[in-house]
Image (cartoon, rainbow, N blue to C red; front, side, top):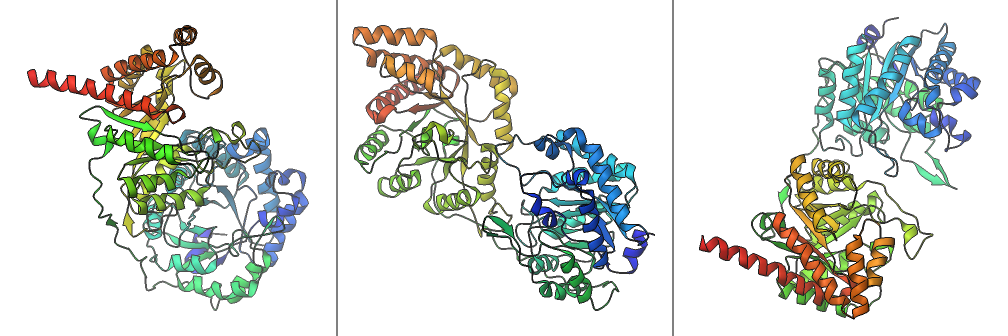
Length: 619
């Protein structure tokens, strides 16, 4: 048996899905664990694919790595699960001449944001452990499949090539035909994989046969690797709570020959496919002779134009030169918006640089901040800075929202996780969290390249500036600023902090940022206290806010003296004094729509700017 020779001489048919046939065991379990608990079923599935005409079967090890098995408490069984998988495949293939591919699936691209995403170092450690298990059991090749993140695939491909001389098959996954999630074309990605030593490169999962074939129309026949195609049976649909795929195998029959004409040497199936689909693919082939030339139809490159709107001086430009004030106004909980718009207009007249609008803060439903932002911009000519949470919007909704922001000319966005639903008015509501806040930053910045989440051209480039949130009210601030580093790496243009009630904390923040070499603009939060009760509520019940004992005592004494409002403003001005010594950005949070307090603090910041300018002019 010689896989490379066979690939050079003829078309090979691979097997189809394993998980689809194991779905009856339940979706909340590890299919790979069935290698141990249901060995006869695994062997039977392999044999069914061989009887259907597969030249190749793959081990039931797609998720048999430390990162994924640990979610089921199976991390100590990695070796046993992978060993059993290879042995079951060998038992099924005994005496048939069928090749056995050791399968390793991708990690990034389909993460649950509620689970901490693994670092690349963790991925590499997990990958090596599984790779060694498969190699020690004697597979014929390594199949790397379902990689949405090309960088991850390139990383593990390098590891595999450095470790073994066995053939390697490297398959990417696409949301859009011919385009990776990053916007890179399939053709260029596959050439990169071939140059890194993959013997076979291609695509699997997500796309059905029609779109998989359309994607491959853009890929030339490579000189240093063969092409592969593992399409899904169709797009999935829900039937009585279960994921199902179209089962018409006659449709698959015609695609065996279509894939051959596109220069594919290795044809198999992914999600939803069964032995009947594989039998249909083989039946549809008019010949096993490879095609060595084809006409390439490149993916249409659409011109990406900059928006023609004049957006004026950006916040990040002004804050580098002068004190810049952002003021947050919470959207109303009722249909009465008079005070909100009166406040926004008064703040704008006072010279505030932007009005920030939260996205259902504290998980409490309010009027849509997109609607309010649009009115501010279109009817009042006020710059809105809109918050967007990962809590309330799934990936589809966030994508749609961001496109809406662009068309409305709302170009300043604060990407936040959002408080958990259980803390708000509707504790029975669910939190979505399709993405982490850093991934939301990254998603928004992709729109500036004219690229959607799936890599598809949007025909126009957006001009978003994206802020990320940071809580400085922690014990070890020097370690916490690593979060800022990460958010900047993901594309954050500036940082907005939770309110601070300790002047020393402002100094510590500046020192920690300088030590870390972080240079993006920082807007430090200030929220005036209205009463001792207000101070105690913020300290004890609002996530991310901590008051010093001194501030709490000052508010208690002021409450008794009937001067709580004045004392709260004095504390806020002391914090502003500290901020303006080290930062140009001030973020004022308006309590209970008391915009008169925010105007007073804004004028206080402006007075400090006037003094600074006078000193400069005198010198």
